[in-house]
Image (tube, rainbow, N blue to C red; front, side, top):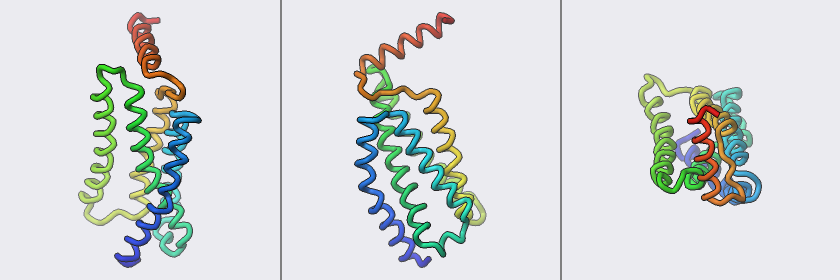
Length: 175
């Protein structure tokens, strides 16, 4: 693809994916916070793995290229948005801003780390390798939310905090 063609492709993928943010907002509020995060993270990782399996030949399949680009461009920005809301709900009031900041920082650090890995390489990585570098942490994140995530749908912040304190007290007491 030419430079102008690649910019146009990325712009179009972002514009096509934008309305999907409203679906994610609805899912987060009315379906499940943790399931929304897991679904979004897995969907993004699977689309990246699609690049792994198709490889550089993807440039010859315009429709598939759009589909595989729309999902990660939209998915990653949506995951970051959902995590911001999620972080504000799961941390107790005393440390809420610190916890939210920590999550925001790690999400930015991940993006910087990927760029640093690409810059540090002697030759630019293939599409497949770049996709694999992005998909692996997403898969680990989905598993972490599956096992350690706290459901926040239809729950008051005080209830979530109280439950976490009870669980923390029980674990310290060895129960």
